[in-house]
Length: 297
Image (tube, rainbow, N blue to C red):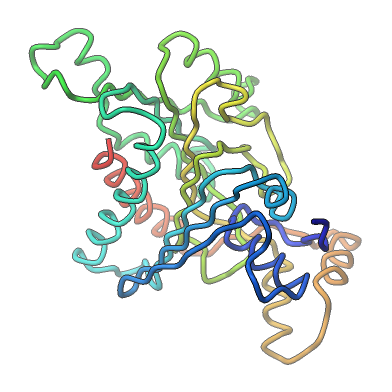
């Protein structure tokens, strides 16, 4: 299946599915794609599965599972709702982990991104709150239950500050400590304002750091690491063209996505933007994801 190009940047599989269906005027599900939606009060879970090469071409994503968890409001969230979000995320993550490894297999958690750029700091901040057990199992085995999973973590930084590709760092660690699975956390790009810092995507197909903002680095996947890679991401930025298009739609001005993107690129207006409350929003998502990972592991 060919289909029309997608002009907006997005890392979200559910958005790519919706964009493809809209661009190609499809009412039925895309060939090679299976999806389902589940609502739990203020939380919506969308599961998208790419089952064959035709689906891969349509969404420009690898075959595998993509789960998106959306919440309506993350600011000023109550303790009860935050706990429900943690439980929901942890449950979905556990399902995917259990498809690839045993309950006691060792896992490496990787926090991607730049700690010193707030919209890109999610991965590093999550790793700071992960419960690490590998060193205890190695050096104080009597102090921990023998069935406890061995968990280690790393924040490799970014190429601009280390001079080393993230994939090179992670590959070296994987080759030495030999975990059975990698969990990589990163910030993502969305084309939907309502999803910024309000969604979590879990996938078992790996991740290409910087892919959503046009700064693609070497991928982390089973192809490069020879072990499964689960990617966890939160959309923290979006293309400026998204805001322009949405504003024009509100004003009932008809303009095509292709035309808008082309004009903004020609005039150097194609910025990547983030909300002014990004510090607070990142802290909220850091707590939810780190607690959810700890529960799942």
